[in-house]
Image (tube, rainbow, N blue to C red; front, side):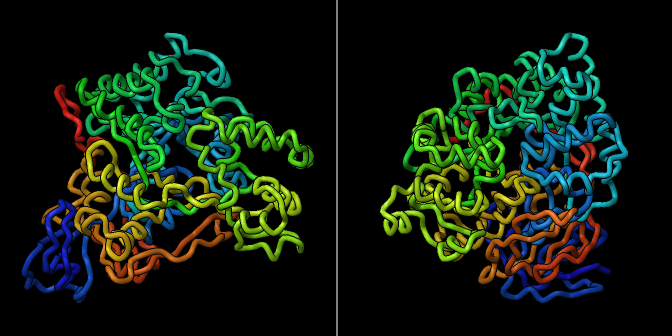
Length: 580
């Protein structure tokens, strides 16, 4: 007998093939049958008018901490994500010495926008090795989860505080390689590292991996080649500023050293600067010409993102702005009143050094969100440009005067610059190729600033009912089979008999996400952005129902995905050719 029989569904199998009407049977966690199914079942579901597809695979999340108190990785789970890849950007919670717990939590709070109070209350510890960390989660997950091994954790574990300042000695590098081998043997998915200017620890110093030499990075990448079903993830300055030739060569060298694909985060697509987009994709082309594989991640939606002058956000990553916005609040406010400081900040955000953050220099398009003073209350929901016209001031001065009246607490929502039709067309062309892949949600990170984890439902809604730039079959494939194959996930990402029953049943006329709101549901009553799913009738993880009518069932059906056992090797043989 089947556990479930889903009748009359429009089945999109994940391969890109056209949808077809079919019944799907589920038994013992697997897809038992697809087609005309007459078997008896414990539960029969009439899916007439609904789409059944594979569960979505999110390739770039930071749920390493959240899964310890929220085994469902919300809100990803209710938006149809059944598998997440965490441990990205070199940041993991293992290996970890007891004396380094506080430093690690403060680093995560700084680089990934996780509330420190929530981390302090929600991360109990109790492990040292990567194997022990994985065991802490095994059997306690509501989704499938795989974890890369972070470079920062390796360096801190071996070198202590010295890892933030010095190159590794040969002996220290050997010790890191030993720890990485142990982590990969335990099931770590691969190796991740950051050498990005955006990443500082809680003390304001570069995170340990930024101090590493290229030789060290390549030596650790080579260790990955020794283990089945592993991969690489990497972020460097050029991911946001534009790649240098040396960075492109390094990305290629890492892929070759590991004989594995490498993905990087995140490609910004803006039709106003098509040359920059193509420059970033040269990393993929160059790698393919040299027998390697480098894949960019890019988001298929405009991610809801708010900012303020009080808390760490994208504004603090702008050159010179970081000097002002990291000062004590009273001193910060004094500086923001200074006309000369304002002039220098405006100059800095328009400079080439600002890189991708130049997009935030269109102050007139900012929308005022929550305010905290009586004089600002009437401004909520209004554009800064309109207010500036009424006040007879420049938009930047208007913006600063507003936030100063709120003692910097004002929530501001920038208008995404890449929302024009030409950018959307370019974005779809890129993710419909092999040089870029859908991803970059940062689920579990930047919790009160941005919300990328809702992208599966929002992307589907856009392609089905709004822009319609891709077929529904291709849209599903980009979020299921494509990432599953990049990471070598065994028997996941397609609706195929015998494969794991990770499935999403949704209404194409309703699929989407609700308005983003602020929720205080993290440990220590910390806040995060949240959005409810729409149109998700059911989600199965390993054949068990985890979501019904957009709500989690609380079922702990997930698998801790271990490399080799749950993944197969995706090598990068010489002679690979990039798609153009």
